[in-house]
Amino acid sequence: MPNISLRATEMPASPIRKLVPLAEAAKARGTKIYHLNIGQPDLPTPQVALDAIRNVDRTILEYSPSDGYRSLREKLVGYYDQYQIHLTPEDIIITTGGSEAVLFAFMSCLNPGDEIIVPEPAYANYMAFAISAGAVIRPVISSIEDGFALPSIEKFEALINERTRGILICNPNNPTGYLYTRKEMNQIRDLVKKHDLFLFSDEVYREYIYTGSPYISACHLEGIEDNVVLIDSVSKRYSECGIRIGALITKNKTLRAAVMKFCQARLSPPLIGQIIAEASLDAPRQYSTDVYEEYIERRKCLVDGLNKIPGVYSPIPMGAFYTVARLPVDDTDDFCAWCLSDFEYEGETVMLAPASGFYSDPSMGRNEVRIAYVLKKEDLQRALIVLAKALEAYNNRK
Image (cartoon, rainbow, N blue to C red; front, side, top):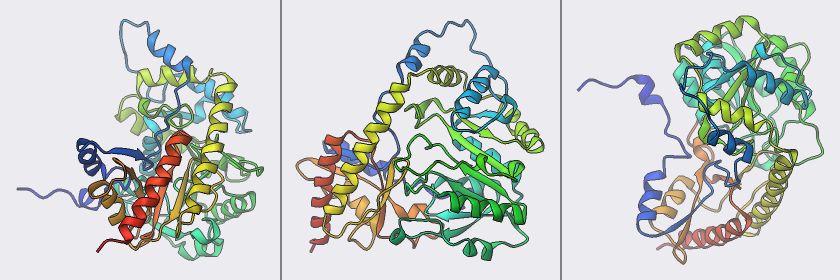
């Protein structure tokens, strides 16, 4: 039988989804699972979006333009204006989710063997996209001890060589919930400018910032406008993960033309998804306010509850809806699998994402997990009880 490609061999399994077979087996046994492993909000999609689906009145579901419908891109200009991100429709390319935006950015900016510097722990699929592009991630490790703050800029500079092409950040951060400060963003800007690098900035969680500190977008940084590639998505903003609509934003006209070649090769982003996304931009402000306030309460419920469990520590995340917590176990990969295969408490268990999958080096984060607070508070409270029971049982095994 022919061998599969080296690229496929090196492609990492998703730490978020690799435990799904164990979860399905647990459900088949009748066990209820609290899904804290994946950023799938349980909050409703805006009514205007659901109405847009019901009211689709077309006789042909045609290809859209490769960069997405202009009407959606024009409407997004207004959305970004409220964050002092000033764009034209030509700066925005609609993609099949934020994932495609990252992939196309890497394919357009990086040659095989090129390197990008990424603070870790980081969203696991960045590694998969880098492998797809033949690029190499050079990690800079942040620590739970200081809340996953940006490592010193000297550690970034020490990794820069003739193959370095860019820096990738996620702000607010998935998986840690960290929010980069103005000082940290300015340090990144100065480094990007000094070495003429690309700055890939994933900002899909900008709605969810829980501190008085301002949101500093990569697009706010002066003097590197042509270096910035902004990644965005409606998935988490409107609880629309399944419509697969994202955006790649750049003021660099040469880069935009390059990205468009990849867009044309895949023909067009999803038609129905764009209709829904455009309608969602008309959601009443109260929708966003209610969602934000709900996450504030869930964050407090989860983090307070985690830190009351003996041996567990979670810093307070300042954005997104995740936290990385340290557990009193040696191997969270084993613990997370065991929770699904060998444990239940009153017919229930928890599903978590082992943090090792959010590091390039899988020996890192072995006592950490990512937890998404995307469940209602009553479910979070119950999940915390089940988690405490699981840790106790796991550490008392004979």
